[in-house]
Image 1 (cartoon, rainbow, N blue to C red):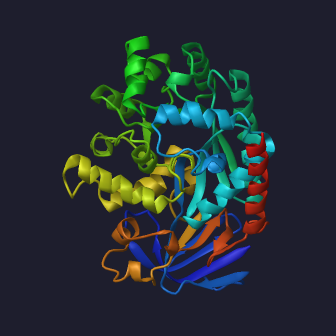
Image 2: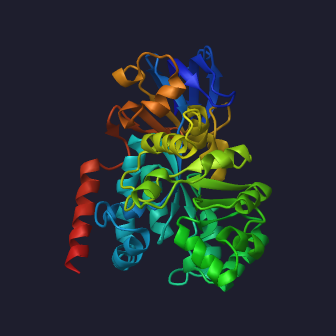
Length: 423
């Protein structure tokens, strides 16, 4: 499939935030041309962008897709009560088929938000992968080992299996969090990281209570413990990274560990505000995730971007803190690199065709004084005109092209939820 996009504004992110007027061509799963005028050729489809913006898709760098079934189920509770009293008991009812159905619902929402890849930490990864493959979506699976579920043997088998099963699916080593994972398990994961020279990912320092209890157990912050255990020898990322000491930040910087901030979830659960400005000052890579739909409750990158910058301005008492450019970079290039998607970070010849079109011809985008700032400060999901993943248009002008109607996906979710409620 060869598609020519013309009459476009193009924000490639390959040369900072400069926007060109020109054309872009995708051929099968990749970008084959980007510039002023595409060569004369035979195209399967030619799309007049009407002056709208083509840019790299957003990367949701931390989520739990199948938790769509818990959307609005357990709100207005503190984190520990929410997790142990509400979430864990319901998750005990999950099976592979329900994870498959609930994940498909999340993918629909990602597409409407211009998200072209997600970093999914959840159980039953084969069914998450099946949902993504059936819909043509790109997913990086993340290990979710803890004291109650999964094992080192499963983690290694998943790592080998899902890194050899096709272009749309990959896998990273990971575990849930310090407070749910024994030191012995963490040491085993560190050994796997050493074996495969692989980064490791986990929830880290999400709440003050989590950090205080870790210090009681080990005399170390979670970040210090992970570093001492060897988990960060090949990089990785800490999801949330809210309560970070200067020493913690230095460990991130030294080891090339990314911080994945989740502002909506952290605000809704009153967990706190991550020190994103300090991270940027120290040269730490930052990406953005929505977290799961049980704690957010939506999977909307536009809301996350605004909250990242808005909360930093409040925390720093500085309206200039955390610029729109910084935030847009986190949501696209930063996320791709944190997730190991080096070929999906920018728009350039040879890169994967993971592209979105932003509708600039709506009132919230006019006038075009500064398109980048418009996207972060006034943009919304309503501005996503098209979402392309791996060279295939999955969402266009409000319609899905994922092999199944949205209504059928909703119906399947409702049927499974009824069974859950009857248990």
